[in-house]
Length: 265
Length: 252
Image (cartoon, rainbow over all chains, first blue to last red; front, side):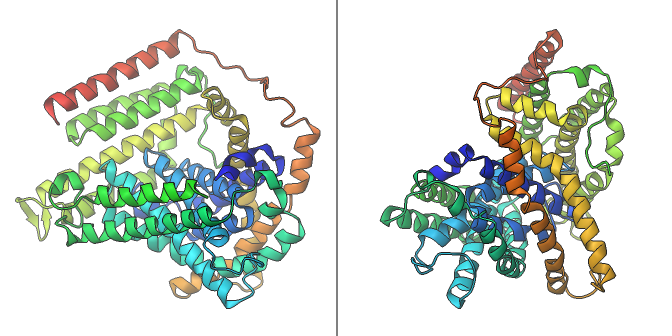
């Protein structure tokens, strides 16, 4: 994860953060009034961007996604949920490029995200789902923790809201954009010096798997618990239901595993 | 196109240090999150509105009225139906659910209005410098403030591209949800490309002006706390402390 912090030394990466954030915010804002969960989320075709930005610009895409979402919140929905929105949208872009680089799904001699083979498209879908679900997990868990929106409602809506555009729009976007970004030498792997690149190898691969499993366990487990598998009512907060396995606990384990896995890479 | 909420006025709220306003905003969030009591939240709403009124920024409520209304409507609708309770009003709607929905709506709206007041009374430069003074690294604050400045330009670009594609026959209004989503591809790609291709020139321009030359930066805009800032911070601190005490003691 060291590239997430060391990238700030590069002026080009700082500029990419600003441009990605501006772009993401500009595409989020027009849809602010089409509310899905009041004060929390809305229809978001812009969700196609974080995964693409993550794969192209790496940590700059992740920071851009987080800051862009925060700026989007400035246009009417800035609240305590914006903190979890910041972290969740960071992971929305961060998880995909880590899955792409470290999980071993693409050929290690050809890791360019050009989507020129069925295997790469499949990997993109796996990576995009990881990012979309990771974002849903973190925001859903955070707002359940604060007693603002039940995990079942928010987790399910953000998952759909993120994953559909990121796959349906993300694939053509990346196919068209990759050659241009590569030609302009703006791929994050071309910008960062070798000493600032993240570590690879067995530990990184293990971290990537832990991160992905954490996301799946936290989100799907949390939804299962919320749906009644362990005694909690669907639209109740954990504190009100007061019995059975807590959504906060199950989703929290997933969140913890996601972060532990992230720091291992 | 004026997309931003900032209103240029000379009031004491505008003249408060951005860090004080951030503290007040987070204090409001904390108090709103602590309580599920409608009277307490209404009292907080009154206090927040008075604060906004003092800063002469409540006119911006008009600009976010659709969002505030949708929040209230959806909260009341959802919680009236799924909130449970014994006093039936109409079909699955219960009085207890209705009151809970109203409480949640007030809670959300208070937080959003507090955020709106902060943004309406603080310049982007002020927010950025405030973040730096709060020990956010300068480069992060720079990216944040640059991104905010870029938003109107990017929206303008995307609007031009939308009009150009419409003139070529792109119909954004018909089709299923998937078809509509797919139609955004010819809009997003040129917007993305036109923004990103400026990266190299932008970074060279920054470096030619000494960006990153020295970690100890000086700023034209200077921030400092004065008596009003201390008074506001002490009042906010007392209100938060009393709220926590009341919550722990009486469990509202």
